[in-house]
Image 1 (cartoon, rainbow, N blue to C red):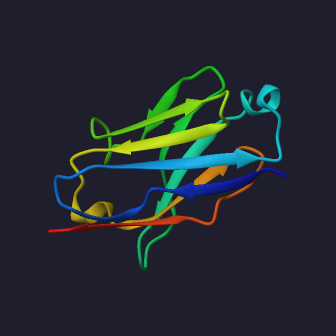
Image 2: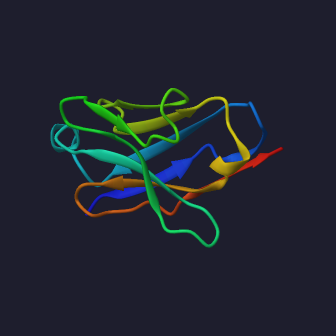
Image 3: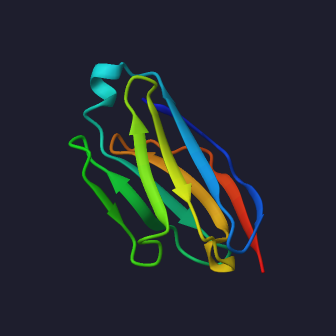
Length: 115
C-alpha cells in the first residue's frame, strides 16, 4: 500500500497560480518510478474527474479543460508528483486528489479560486 499526502492547496484569485505536491511513502524509489500517477479533482455536487496523468515513461496527459494551464511533473528520487496550476479559473475550485495506479488515494487538498 502506498501512502499519498497532498499539499499546496489554498485560496487564490482568478488568474493566479498554485503548485500542488503529492508525497509518496511506503514504496521504494525503484518501484515508484514504475507507477502511473494522476491528479483528480472533485467539485461540490460533481463527480471526481481526471485532471492530469504521468506515466512511468514520463508521458503526460491532460483534461481538455486544463490543457495549456496545468502541468504535471514528478521527482522520482524524492517520490513526489506535482501539479503546477496557472491561469486559475473559478471553475477550477475543487478538492484535488493524488492517485497511484496501485489504487491508493491521498486525502485531498482544497483549491478555491475566487472571481
